[in-house]
Image 1 (tube, rainbow over the protein chains, first blue to last red):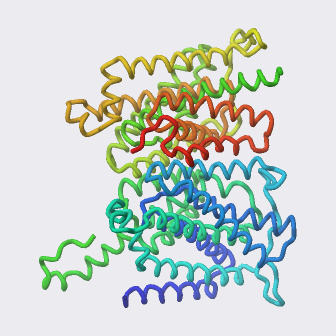
Image 2 (image 1 turned 120 degrees about the vertical axis):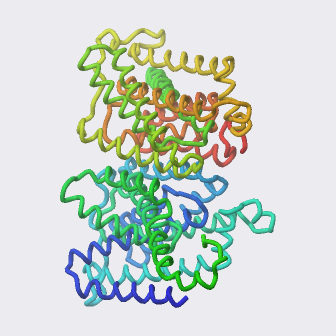
Image 3 (image 1 turned 45 degrees about the horizontal axis):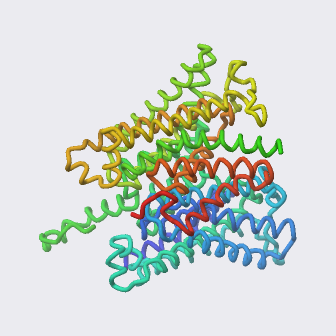
Length: 324
Length: 285
């Protein structure tokens, strides 16, 4: 417990220090990282707890982003209403997708979410009258309340950081709650959970909608961060990017997805000096992560620290089995 | 009325291409529960290599063969050197194929650039023939005939040969089939190779219908997935029916409601998922 609290304090301290110490570019990079960390968390919630690898979490971000762009720019609705409607519409989409996918398992879930996600991409691409097609909808801006301009990178940073930390804390609680344990139980042995009287489909469906909502929140920030909504964030490339970040960081842990996003963005920044083959880099990272480090960086670190602090403990409890 | 015939024939051409792509994919999936998400990239690989060979040698047959063999080589290499390391972990295998697909597609973009490429066909193949109801390009008629012959050949192999029986046994019950002395890993390598070969061939002949561009790999993959989800994973008959439905919907939606063409493709899939989640000819697990 104490270690967890220390980690949380450390992260919050780092998040507070970042805009005070760094320049504008670094702060806007951090904004992007937090938004993708939310998307990766949305992915990891399903992958880590249920073994459901989804390729449509970025689609929920896209649905929410398009709702904001269309209602905010085309119809000029006020900011709070637009955001509420965006999240509501994301929830409705998540319910529909959830109903279609709740019975599928593993690989078929992956295929279904790929197909459903691409369907929405196709709609955003071809339904030009509403979505603006390839060019998208530009001019998505946050409002200014008095002297507080939410479009300012640093003000936006405070907003994104607060919400991101709050959502990560909520998911942290969720992982420890009976519901979170039930999800793990379902992943382990669906039949047994059903035999014990747990509503397996309902639990999976609820998790799917929750994860979709997190994706929706990421979409709200994404569209205001970019200022434009186009089909590209809904494409397979983005979905695989988020998946790669989560696998690299460790989708089974709470902080793994955030770690993966940070590492991947740093790697991309580094590599972009030499080549612009981003997709190839992502593909290679995904390939190597799965072959060499299927549990991700977070668990590698965890084991490293455990081994370091172990010698004292292992003397007294030699018979204790290896912890999973 | 002419439009109607034209759209029907286009739908049949599309269905033929989809069947060539999806038949191998669905058999491989049925046999080893591996869905090859690099299938679209193999299609692209076959297409580019095939077009290049046709340009260099002037022979269409050589081009089709080269495209098929390039994809076959890619499939075999991926199966031997990557998928076998994580055999048994279905999801890891699927994710590996995604990664390989990304790398291949990006590499092709580097080598061949982003300009759309179409198939250099000899004039006698491009010329339309009279089908009774209307004139239609000869090559597209050939694609349809090829798909039908392929379907018959696959069906004969699956029904009447020892290999077919072994594949069916492997699809039904992998463990028992292995216990009976059937070399399922070898069989799987074979089916995977045939599936990749067909993807490559489809890439070459399909280029006469859809030109090769960036992003086509994802579209082809998505269409193949829709076909096998509709038809039921692992079923050849399902792939045929799924391809017909998807091809027709695609053609008519493009003709009458172009704004929703891609979206409408998913309508039959969604309906099937709601009312028959295992697909039209799939078995419940």
